[in-house]
Image 1: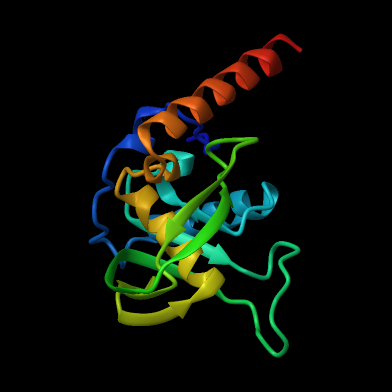
Image 2 (image 1 turned 180 degrees about the vertical axis):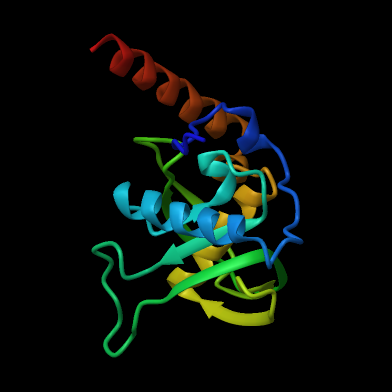
Length: 177
């Protein structure tokens, strides 16, 4: 199977992904390996499985992968989350985000400042993550993907239409070049 980045408006980006229930299957580790490989290749910080055509609730992230300014003493995080769910949100911040599935698009949207996420790791063990700031934003972005919610859905309808018009115009120009 060819694992290429899916760009908007690919239908898989609009669908809620299936939960993983095959933790003993080598296919799961293959998916995870391919996801990290693609994320690093594209210089992303996070990747949801549906972004490369895998229809399951799997996300990978590595906050060490980009040139983000980390706070003094703050370390990056690398993780795999399976069947993740946000169970608590706190506060609100404005987040300027890009997305591998929307090349060239940068938008500012509201996100929760802190989140609590429950998920499973690749062995099927329960994990819980309390995240704030950048990690909280990445988790919200990728979990939204797994639920078929693109980041543009956090814009007002008017702003969303403007962003999509510009995005499609850029795609056409890129295709002609």
